[in-house]
Length: 220
Image 1 (cartoon, rainbow, N blue to C red):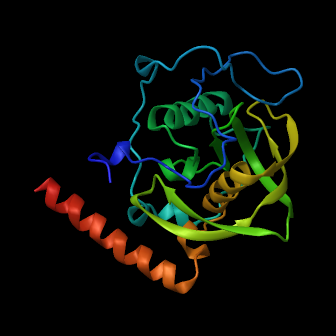
Image 2 (cartoon, rainbow, N blue to C red; image 1 turned 60 degrees about the horizontal axis):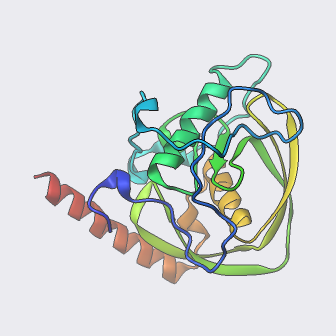
């Protein structure tokens, strides 16, 4: 595992090459047709970030057990565009594939997933799961340093809204489908390792206890 908690990132290990490490800069202009909030030209700048980038450990974040209510665009509790900026900045700096708002202790039904372009998904819904599935290792920013094998459908169809409230429909396959389902689970109060078969789930829990002990010992 990496030395620092905030440098341990989501990593899905397979041969899919659909994701990208291209730097991403959030656009301030509303998209015309795509529903995405990005500009893939400019590099990330750490000095753009003025907010706390820490991520609570999963066992300390009770919000991960709760279903997040739909985001109300008619009467928003927070600015959805600024929230999108924050989440995108997090995945850029952490070099992660995705993160949900409730992983940060923010009670909003939204996540971002790294792709080209980045998808900001408010009020996501999965309308179709393929019968074909694949087992891959998954890890998570909320439980850094450990992974677990999980079987998920390889193709999904989804609906969501972008930060401006525009409705979007997409079909994802491969890695993008897996990342979407992983973050979608967070918003539905499902701890991702609960998707694993009992043997792998128990091994995950044992490994996580080792990580927690390591972190406590390092803090002494």
